[in-house]
Length: 240
Image (tube, helix red, strand yellow):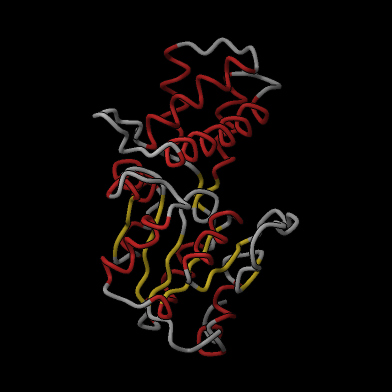
């Protein structure tokens, strides 16, 4: 990696927080269907963000298609439960939405983030989630203080991979594209950042096959600790 990066930007869900840890709460409420519900819920959540952005969330003739990520997540849950023929009561819905604010954080997060900051690098989150969701999940995971800024795409009323979402970072930090390294466990997100002109890291935790669309991203890793290796021996020297 080039030695000129000053800002490391992280996606949130799947990258710092295990989005599929919600399956435990799903399984408690719907035995034998928890994993299926968690998977479909996540897929539909992302589908809805793309539909909103592709349809112009600002609308025409005064109409508005944009909804917050919280609302999209709630509607994706309702759809998924109905699709799987699950009886989603009001109480069940409340429990699962609250569980989304307590997603499990990956154990290496704090160590890696603290090391990056000790090297003088700025750190940020760029996420589809609205500010309240990001505040709660990062506070609950006790890593909120390890970021210079936690940025929601809600500011531009678009969702990733719309270029305006990545553009937020350069505006807020007053940095050039060449100074940014973006880390995401979502291959489509890493690709979107690559198309935008950033160096990107695909954190491929599941050892999934590479997407066939678009160029390859700059770096592939399977554990967040490996990010330190991209920064060279100085970062690695006290990382373990």
